[in-house]
Length: 140
Image 1 (tube, helix red, strand yellow):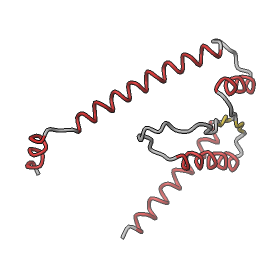
Image 2 (cartoon, rainbow, N blue to C red):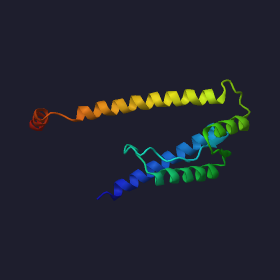
Image 3 (cartoon, helix red, strand yellow):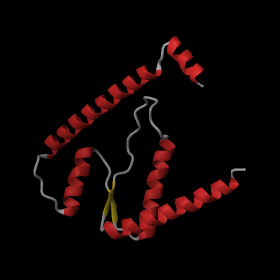
Image 4 (tube, rainbow, N blue to C red):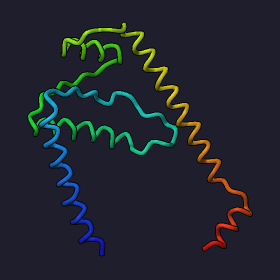
């Protein structure tokens, strides 16, 4: 029963892929790929698996090769990655690298704390009293 729909979605995703590749060819003159070199946080809230992350890395490199977009793969610890990217593109250093990393880590931690707080709020909203659950059930 779902076969016609599956074909439609396949054609749709193929067309979306074509559009995305054409746009990438137009706007990127170089690309830096930061490979996955760390495991995800095992908190049970990640939408993908480690296998999917690794596969995504491989598929991205394959797509860049097909599009003939020049790219560099930059791995290693964060300070090494930043230094290499600065060197590759001749970028000016306006903030010392350790200070920039510390600021980025502070901002990411604050954002993650906000997300965790929000997740706790939504979880609390989902835990309805028995009376409220029954009233919802009678609405339908």
